[in-house]
Image 1 (cartoon, rainbow, N blue to C red):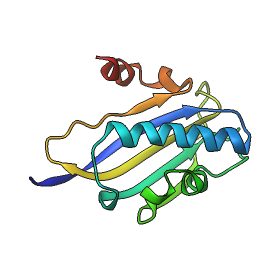
Image 2 (cartoon, rainbow, N blue to C red):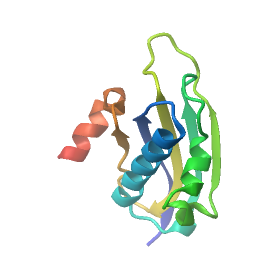
Image 3 (cartoon, helix red, strand yellow):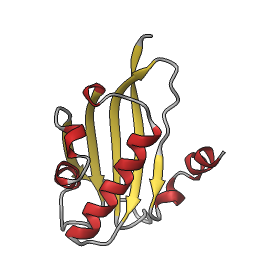
Image 4 (cartoon, rainbow, N blue to C red):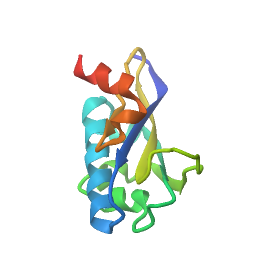
Length: 128
């Protein structure tokens, strides 16, 4: 079966400590990886953003050092600052995963740890 490139989104809220950022990134990515079927070699990149109130640990480094690090060895990992927007959700890490999956796959996004308010439509879709 043919593969095509997909974008899978995720977000998680956490406290501004190295330990909490590590745990939040690992939990979010673990859920993203388990809900979506792909081979590690089909993983192209993960682009993290984080709100300005988080600066204790880089989420890309957190993922590389996590128990999932072996799955992302060949992928490009990048982190940038989230654009500051009045009223936006604080202490939030977002990710865009770019991955090849079987054509016709339905990407399953993951909003957790308080970030569910950003995309309740995705949260409801996972519960159905």
